[in-house]
Image 1 (cartoon, rainbow over the protein chains, first blue to last red):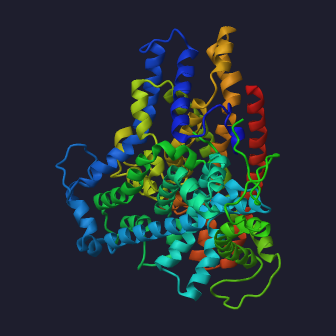
Image 2: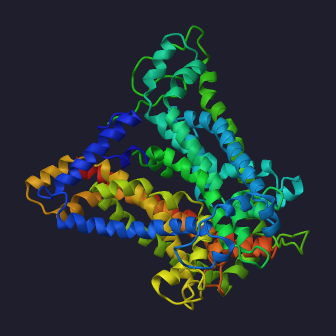
Image 3: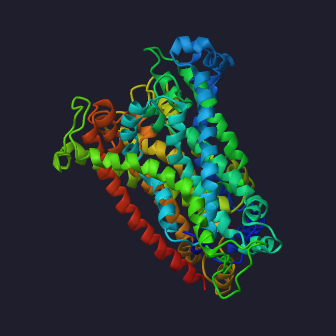
Length: 316
Length: 318
């Protein structure tokens, strides 16, 4: 999936430069495809209408979720768009009041999610960066096997691993603990970090490090002072993307945690069956709180998202 | 091409360049050869830590392990015989395949369409591009919760807005599979769209200029030039989506938990019900092993198709 998927190897290696150039190139090629096309031709307006249709479908649920979260308890079952908005639901969800109503301690779940995800990403970085460097810089015997085993974690059905882990964790006392979750989240974060960073290390010319070696740097110093700073965007992007996917994970904590260390994804679903009573607006508020961190992170790394989502296969 | 020079573990580059000196104190060759292994060692340990439960799971498939059988014995292929002759398993396989083909197909078509429209870079398109990925970045399970609220026949907004009254049930036995695919399309179409859009933007423009000079129509250029060159990007997106659909769990479980009946019981949900709800670890593991085999074989096939497409795209570029 590497260089072959990038037709035209004329882009420079620096991510920022390539981004700009390919963007300009793409736009002009599309615009010149129909030279007579004016900005507001009927065809262009038609295309915008189609696009608008998709985005109504795409964004309406989110807008409605926000509206629902602002409705008071008496208005939560109404389908109207006019109501008197209140922010009380968010306070209720995070306070002990929400915990009493729905038996879900949401602020604890939020803390658990933060600890699990930050922990999992840090472990993945410490372990994954050297492995990615080794795989990106050298062709050693077995490197392909290691890399593809790591990638296969991404595509393996989760339960294949979780069911035995459920048994093992119960024996080891790791069930319903942060350590247990950080361990199993490696299944999500490690492939991301290693594969994305490998593609960054591959793009970095080896000559830069060799120059540092000639200047008398040790191998370790050349790695720390030359290679690592050059892939900083890759490290940031892969770490943040790994954070998003660790945060959004559901099936691991569903099985491997009980009530003590539930992360937000499981906690939100508990609102739906909150003791036979319907807490629609509370559910909506909880869903928004749980969805905000990954959304904000995603918007901040949008430029690197494509490469990350495709595990380095598409170098946009 | 710009492929960077690969370095052998002993420090020399591929090619016949002289070997570089390693600082003031040369490191013995055997230690330099060890370097990549030492660097990968922690990752390999993690891999073993994950492969061990995986192997244990495969082993479970050959036992009669369940909560009611705490001291399981080896039963050979009996679980496989039981599962493969169970109509519930084949109904799960069918549901999973319908789901995967339906969702991946719709997302690919829609994603390519959206990417082509966004590539025109109208002022509206530029605004949309910023928010395109929002559904993708929400946890699928939260998307499931969100759509469950919207699907509610009485209080949900969907029936109200679409004028379906308060009796239309999106999650009934006949509509449930369509509805969960719809939610999958809502979440993951942006994934296909951003990948394809990145692909379109990285295409070289010379072939398009040349064919315009030759008087090719817009459709002809799309069909004969753009599509073959975009094909590798489309395939990467299809591979990711199809593989993920085969093991779909999160939002389907929240929306329907596999029901009503077995209308949306995909393979991974079946395995969950067998292992975690019925505590029959061996049957659950057998389901997972069979699903794993399906995923593995499909991945092998799709990756070989991708390799061919990449070579073809590179060829058509020359």
